[in-house]
Length: 250
Ligand code: NAP
Image (cartoon, rainbow, N blue to C red; front, side):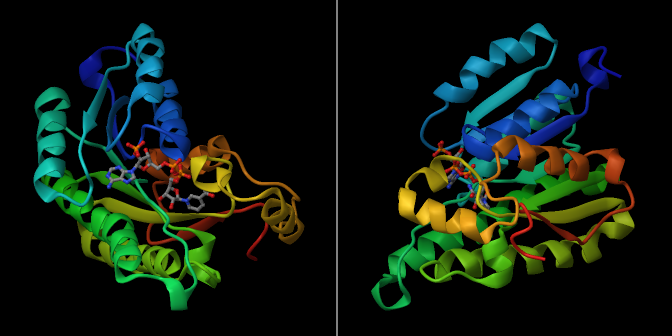
């Protein structure tokens, strides 16, 4: 039902200002959900989409909040609840890389990635599930990575954070299933966003050669899976990790 505002479902996408998060927000908006997005530095990209969404009756809250700061996250969640009365879907998408070889990696590079990707997922999930538990319904989708499953040289911080997200997701799925809250993780391979734009052409060619489908994925292709897992279309799926990687890991 895409009618009146109060009948719409609500999706909260962390780091929804760019890349995969922006496509995920677009997918939920196209399917009639009201949208909550947070970001840390710039919302220009997603602000231009707001007008398009609003012309279809979709409301969007776009708020500045760092996922590692519980107080900022709680403010976003409170504003979302005050505005929409509920959050049906949470997508823990905000994430960063600080790549380096183990021997060269600073403690700061290690900590920053774990803090944003893993602790951030914990902070936001805790704040949102408080309301999902009261409603006895909800779906959580966490962004892991194939690198969290198989590892990657130069990314020990990132792969540890994404492996952590898998353990976190399975634990949350077990803990909250009795309240009708599902939790799943998606593990994208190489996807064309700002995060991978920094790779050289030589590295990209090498990557293509490792992918059976011989190309990087698009943010839209990841968003399609996330939408499926967030929506009731996947109502009997919980605690799973699903790759979207052109066959890279099988
Ligand atoms: P991206 O284009 O770099 O966008 C990252 C998003 O996260 C931005 O909206 C950014 O906000 C937000 N963000 C970063 N730190 C944050 C913080 N502390 N608090 C709140 N928001 C924060 O990245 P992407 O490629 O779309 O990746 C999205 C997710 O997919 C990440 O978890 C990533 O690890 C995962 N992933 C990506 C790939 C890939 O190949 N691209 C592969 C596997 C997994 P600002 O715009 O304000 O900086």
